[in-house]
Length: 364
Ligand code: HEC
Ligand code: HEC
Image 1 (cartoon, helix red, strand yellow):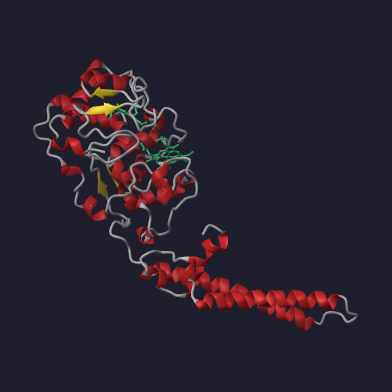
Image 2 (cartoon, rainbow, N blue to C red):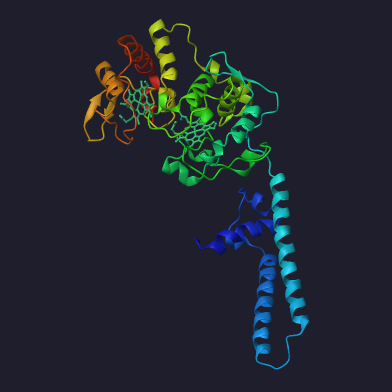
């Protein structure tokens, strides 16, 4: 079913029978679900056009001029078609407004603020950030729309099958920002991957500090308020609003007995942008998760095996190209300008996520 009529028909079907597709649990129905009303109208319109064509062709060879009645008939047909098309739009619009919001639908009100779950003390207004996002044209490079093929294709880093967009996800957006361009990654769940206002503000100001070859423009000309709001909007993406409001993300891990070195490593993990490619909770991203990494056995792209120890970690950070992990692209920039102390802190932080972690086996 790849021919274009087959792809268009479901939309028409949904339009003619309000609730049909929603009842089936998906926004668009199948070609075969098109009701008889659709086929009837399509047949009438098609038959009308064919009849007029044959009639006009036959008249051409006769002496008499074509009477205006023929053109009136054609006009009526075109008008009927136009009305039919308009109704399709209206019915679909009605259908969408009746679609219930999904559980994690974006839902932020004007004026509502979000405190940084990353604990930086920054805050911003997601709703206002949404407006800035729109005004700055982020949609020219980013989509907010996960298609099934984006999961396999890696266009939405860290996305799972459950993240594929549904109509109800967009329910509360004043208008949707699906976007058409994928010059940058899809941002639908970016807030779940990087729940950190500080990181987003820094990345917006200087994308190449984190991704040396990024083509994203620098937004350092924006006022701090706009940057903070944009960051809050980004963090709001992919996190159920209720959980964010309750601060559930930030307070997840007790950090009482963390050593100063590990704490420094944790700050570097965000400050140096490791967070943009590595998670600490086992969820997938552009690079391997850090959860349970230390002490595990790693399979490399060339088929070799290596035990993750301090030496391996240091090398992976300063010369990532030396040993590339199987199943990942060699896109990590070398962090060869870190001081010895910073490197030590990062390694200590990684170590703290590995050895102590009982669920080390369950990663990836
Ligand atoms: C010219 C295209 C372009 C525009 C415009 C653009 N971006 Fe990007 N963006 C990219 C590319 C490419 C990447 C991937 C490399 C990177 O992370 O810098 C990216 C990455 C990102 C990321 C992911 C960061 C990460 O570490 O995973 C966020 C968030 C982001 N952009 C937000 C924005 C926002 C907000 C705007 C508008 C203010 C915007 N972008 C405008 C191209 C663009
Ligand atoms: C642009 C994305 C990106 C950034 C930023 C990044 N990494 Fe990576 N990293 C990767 C990828 C992809 C891999 C797997 C491929 C490879 O081994 O090079 C990786 C591999 C690693 C490994 C080896 C993991 C394993 O499973 O063996 C370590 C350790 C690591 N990175 C640490 C860091 C640290 C620390 C930072 C921040 C200072 C960082 N990375 C920043 C993408 C990134």
